[in-house]
Length: 304
Image (cartoon, rainbow, N blue to C red):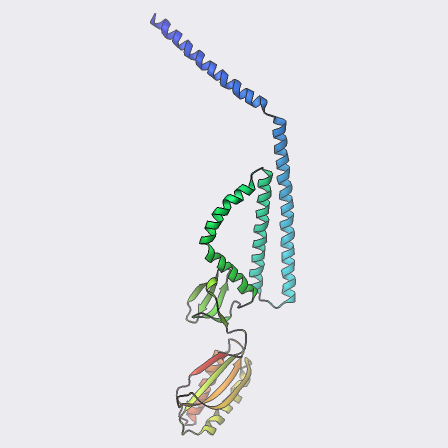
């Protein structure tokens, strides 16, 4: 009796499960049967063709734009005297800006073809952009300032400059930072937004002022003659000298100290070598002649 009851109960459970499965199968069959497969396939094909056409169109635009930029910069290089570093930097920047613009409009077209509401996404992204923009103000300022530094040709790699309290040689120019190697070897990274006043010491000839101090009772004509002789001997050996050396005569530093002043104009970068050589020659010849000389401070300034 108990075995019969269990058998009947199992048959009831099996029947119930079978009915539920049949009901679910009928629902899925009815759902897939009512789908307009022709319309779905047609829509997929239409979207795929649109994306392919957009890809071909933007690939052609990207290729044509890069060709135009490259041709423009080659023409600029031939027609203007610009350093290769500045031209390469501006060229790379232009390519990147154009590339990202093409990508933006390409993805905009693809999303529109897929039926995604791009306007809603842009509106939502606008709030995030504002938040990011507030935190990236310094970065944007660096990039804009760096672009105008390159555009205005304020300095080139290798130029001797003074920016704020930092003096040295330009090592690298970037859109975010400028690198300067100090005269003691320190490498400075300066954010471009902090560059307000630039003193470029490499655009003009440099002026070296050499003051040879002496006692008031010294024989000034004799010292002047020795200095002129040194100038005549050394000047032909240094083609870097563009003007001078010229003996200006006796000057007073304002504290009762007298000096014979010599001015020499040289090409940029050669002023330190020239002033060292001439000063050493002055001191050697004056000492040999028995002239008593004091310390000779140097004054190197940019030519006007």
